[in-house]
Amino acid sequence: MIKLIIGSKGSGKTKAMIEQINHAAETTSGNVVVVEKSMKLTYDITHKARLIDADEYKIAGYDMLYGFLGGLLAGNYDITELYVDGVLKMGNHDLEGLGKFLAEVDALAGDNVKVTVTVSADASALPESVKKYA
Image (cartoon, rainbow, N blue to C red; front, side):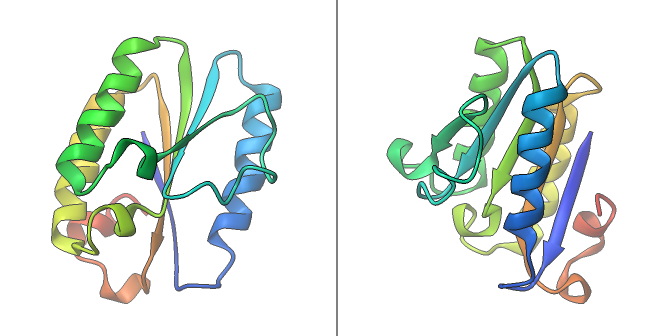
């Protein structure tokens, strides 16, 4: 299951996600994993959530990000919540490619993993392939 947090830069997407991450870390019976570009959230989220810097693994493009997320889920069956912050930065701001990426991640996560993704764009600029997850 995928949920998007959509809005332009400075609209409070990351703040909303931080609240969701901290709440999930306190209430879920599994693991909470956060993937972000750079380590901006280090002091904002609880230590109970695993924070991963995409830059450390040289993730560039949706294909690499998909493979990385697949590896995370394959290596740890206890992940119940997965958060991706700044997906457009990692995907080179490719809105059409984002729709394909979200469909692939949705199939990968299935019903067992809740995936939340921040998208820094105006909702009206998003293609239908992305809007269906909003």
